[in-house]
Length: 117
Image (cartoon, rainbow, N blue to C red):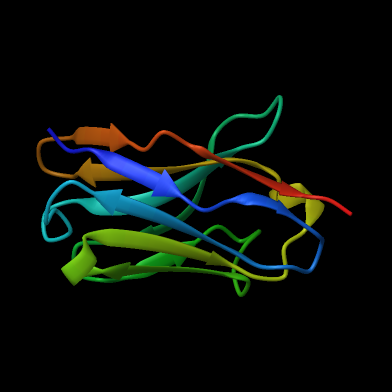
């Protein structure tokens, strides 16, 4: 059983920055791909960024160049650095661990990000 505990988030003005953290209960990054999703009010959950077990990263077009996903293997923590935030980035952000071979998925508890003046 993997536990993912999120922190960070909050209210920020447009153009501001926030960093989200997702701490895993063990050293899982060698076997689990890690993802950040978000869900805006009234919309479906969407994939924002991911980092594979090999360290490759990818981003949704809407956040490319503004968000950065990274991980600290020693701290078992994945981060999402969000810069140049826009009101449309508002939503609940979730981290996700996915074991691609056995198709097992774990979710963090979610954290609210609100971008508003």
